[in-house]
Structures are given as C-alpha cells and as structure tokens.
Amino acid sequence: MRNRPIPGSSGRVRTMTLLGDPLLHRACDEVTDFGPALAELVEDMFATMYAARGVGLAANQIGVPLRVFVYDCPDDDDVRHLGHVVNPELVEADGVTVRGPEGCLSLPGLEAGTERFDHAVVEGLTLTGEPVRIAGTGWFARCLQHECDHLGGRVYTDRLTGLRRTRALRAARRAPWARREGQGTPKVP
Image (cartoon, rainbow, N blue to C red; front, top):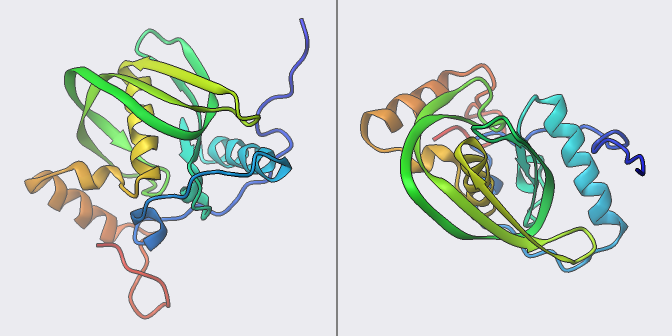
C-alpha cells in the first residue's frame, strides 16, 4: 500500500471570510484551470479547515470565488468521508427532512437548527479533471448540501426563517468577530 501525504500537511492556513463579506453572498465561478494553482488551493483549504476544526470548507470561505470544496466529515454511522470536489453540482437532495444543529466556519461559535435532506449526491471533478460522484446520508449529507450552498452564494442562515433566523442573525451581530460599520468592512446583516 502506498503512503499518501495527509491532506493539508503542506498547505498554509488562510484567513477565514466571515459573515458580512459580500463574497459569501455571490455565486462562485467555475474552475477552468486544473493546474498546480488548483492543487495548492485545495491543500490550503484542507490546512485551513483542520486549523479551524471544521468538517468542510468552500473556497469562497477563504476569499477565493471558485467552485471548490473540501471535506473530512463522518456520517451518522461514524464512517469518515474525506475528499474534495471541483465544480460540484448537487444532483440529489431527498429523503427525510431533518432539522439539526448546523454551524459554519464563517460564523464561528454559532449554530442554529437548520432543515436539510437526509440524503445528498454531488457530482463534480477531481483536481485532475476526472469525474467524481459522492453520496452521503445523515451528517455527511448535511455537509454536502452546506458546502454546495456556499458555492451558490448562500450561508446556512439564509435557510432559516422567523424567530430562528432573527435569533441567529442577532447572535452574529453580537459575536466578537462581527464586522462593524465604520471599520471599512461590511457589517453582519
């Protein structure tokens, strides 16, 4: 068996894009260059995700508006899923709808009960442009849907309604990391 390097072990940790940054609210661009810069981006994404103790990370969360995400996420049976997807498309999201706690590295320390389907399938490409299909259930299905939302310009708070949304956005405005008006950066909605 060949030894593979641990994803992210040669990457650099990048600054996280936080809620309120317009980059999180616009659709990302398709990847067209499958060269060394893409491999470096994915390596940096893994390094950043691990440093932040996350289970998934989209490229726009580190300021790069490209359709790429990485993951290292268990499913509900504690089976580990590890990988990346370039130009992902959520092709199936079905089954039971489950409201469960959901957080985001772009909203550190916050979470809210968010409805997601219990089954999801994503199709896309690898770093070398080979087709890939990833299916997940439970927690991993939630991760796949969450990361695809990011690449479409949505964060999980966009899925919340009513009092749940009001409370989540109030908590985000009060968070220590919240961007304030007058500091040259967008404020939290």
